[in-house]
Length: 134
Image (cartoon, rainbow, N blue to C red; front, top):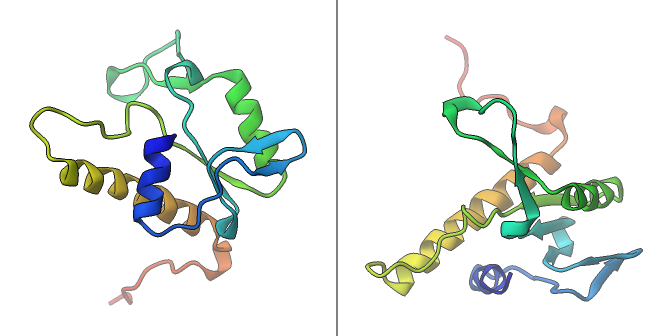
């Protein structure tokens, strides 16, 4: 969570770290202006699907039931929840510079924020296509 918070700060986001509470739920990484919570469940926050492999032959991890419950509770209170899985968060490798790592982390967060913003636009106001039919 600390590297996600640092990347959000580099992007200039107004982040609330742990001081927001919603009933019994503490919002660890939240952007109150967007009513968005970022979850970083880590390795214990998901379980492997034991049934049929998903598309591409790889088993898709499922969120741990308690993480899923928390996500649903926040959504019922009007918050959007974006999950940042541990395997999608860029980590430092021996050959990559710190600047490259920061750019990769910020790009992932920009995608998550764009997805959250797009989902918050009412469907009647979303642009279907910028091109006109011929």
